[in-house]
Length: 176
Image (cartoon, rainbow, N blue to C red; front, side, top):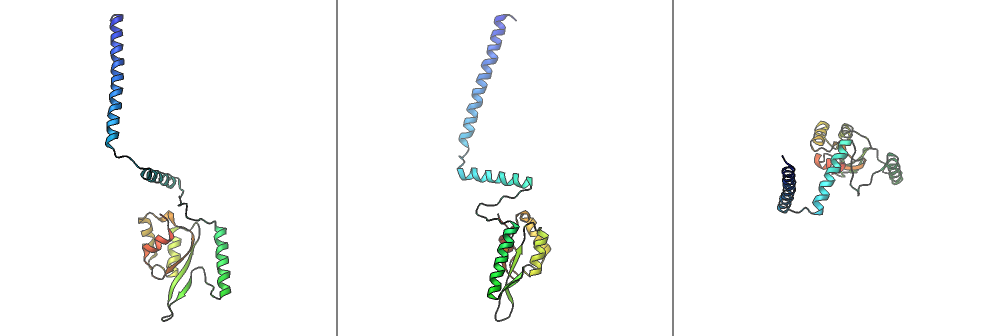
């Protein structure tokens, strides 16, 4: 090949690359025009899902900003103050104590249960079963696992009706 032959060979290769790049950009623009535009809410939802997935993989739990989280000391202090106030009124209750009594039958209508930070799903199921809130602790644990809410249990003091629906109990003690 002569010098002029090599020059036209390289010019042809260069021109082909440039034309190919331009065609690729035109195809990308055409594909983007066919896609529906993403609004800010959809982008935020996808980003939130990505963060939740990453946090779950790392063993962390993300809580909504409107959820007030307490340390165990803060929770114990609030519980101590609530118990002191209840004792002054003469209606002190235990950790899983009856709060309302059906006047006609003498049956307990509501039960307060304290779920402490770090309790496992099995511990919570045992506590709720002992308090009479749920009938079957194994079924409760299974339902928590099916709904993937086992790591989403919140600590706190909750009031339940005896024999309350399992899904409403799960809704009260977990976050989305």
